Image (cartoon, rainbow, N blue to C red; front, side, top):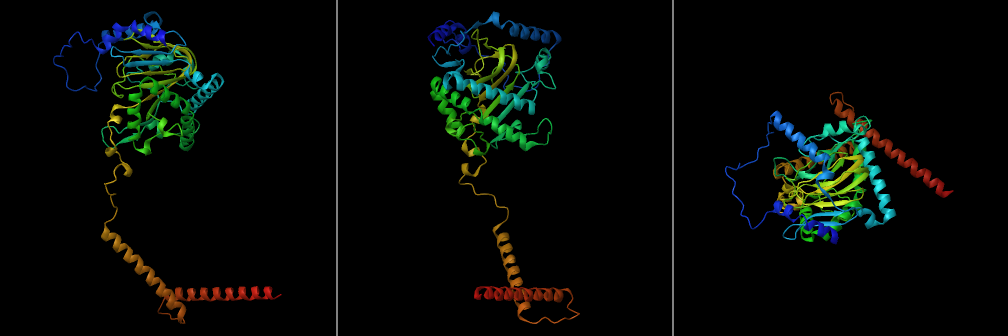
Length: 423
């Protein structure tokens, strides 16, 4: 730990560039746009070519451009205000659960992720984090179909787009269907639920490390998670107090390019656990000038909305589970939820008015009384056959005949019972 902190202090200048230097006043931006546009930016050919060259140069020169943190070293980087911004714990699962048990958990979880990805192919992504998805698949034949898998699942909860109706479950959480039968959604949901439950030890490890690194922010996450609608919470542990993150991104062999997590909790943390069998795949932070080895079983926490980061190339199968909390989801208060428990003073919307309900009950009572009177009258008086009564008298005759047969059957049963008891 001491070596890691000493190493972090050597990059003080890089961190100051990131978080600002109080000795130099910030210059005010001129003609700054008031609202960010979601429209794609049109690039010229020269601009696009320069961006491609920059991407490949950064990606393949990660070993040469960035200083590597010593392997098997717990590392915490802090900013100029002594606030932690990065936490690295290599091989933490084996260190926390023991070598044998940790190894078995890594092996079984890797097998579960691989099996689920083969049964339910992950969606391909082409956002700013994975703009070179097709190129990455072409460079790795083992990721190509029909047997290869490369993509990202999003499991959990995020706000409904464009509305304030509270959180909703993601599309990947709800959809189902196996590779052999896409309509078999019940099997896919059961398989996914088991896989999420198997991530419980990772969730507990993340919670423990979060309490060690930044306990104050951890309690804020716990409070925000508690405010969410219980119907959209996806628990991986039996005790809900261990759950802090409503959303998980499961990356299946997907290359993550340089980016910042703009939509996440402002100044908050994202925690990731790594599984698989691979070589390479260092976690690179350009602003700090370092790259962090992440062998299987490692856990890394980062303030993703402040630090730019990406993952270098690797060989093999690499799966990572990223835990994060959306800023828009954080701002949802209990009063914004849809469940009745969060709105005790709000009466439920009736489907019928009180007058309509009263009229319906009165009609049903009258119908029952009429039926009872009809049965009583038909059984008490003799039914005469009249041709002009039509179907009504036929129905009454059948009812009386049925009652007589029932009485005769009961009398016979009573006589036989008395004879058997007398013998």
